[in-house]
Image (cartoon, rainbow, N blue to C red; front, side, top):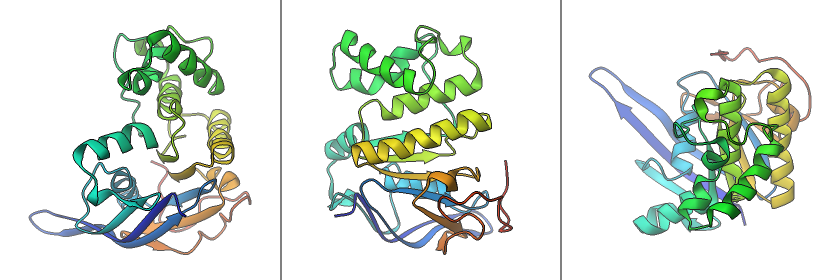
Length: 244
């Protein structure tokens, strides 16, 4: 059974002049232990697709299934539990809580689930160590660099060992060395925990760790990106991709 199954998914937006086909009939299946890298130009619908998979947006048409369960048929409580316990969402921006130490920012999902503070801090400290921040546990966000804040947010997304990891430009604010470390970490977690990982990115390094590489253009999936085959180093392809 697929961890994530997307069927004919559609999400359109309209403004005064245009209809924006953010996601336009996408079919996608991601298995346990698989890393899928999704490339596409800005505005191609990548973030919208992740938000739909997380149940943070409602589709116009189509279905999103997690382990066979249709998100559209979940109650509000079931959907909240899915987002809290089964999904690790890595946002483009860190969204850390000001004035709160890194270790407690990373532990927030455990604390919401009622885990004792001492236990939650211990678990979160282990994940911060895995992203190279064992020396920053008690630093508040204002004392962290942008890259360090991004790594705290990655630890926060992974702290409850989710079955589905949705990563929106996870290396966007990291240097190439740290970025590759994070990509390898996501790949390792997919294997260790049999998690499904979907990452949207402009980073060509992601193709080195991905099992599959797809492109999203005008809300529709395309075949694997030329020059970015899984496991093969390559540059950003000439598909109108932006580095922004």
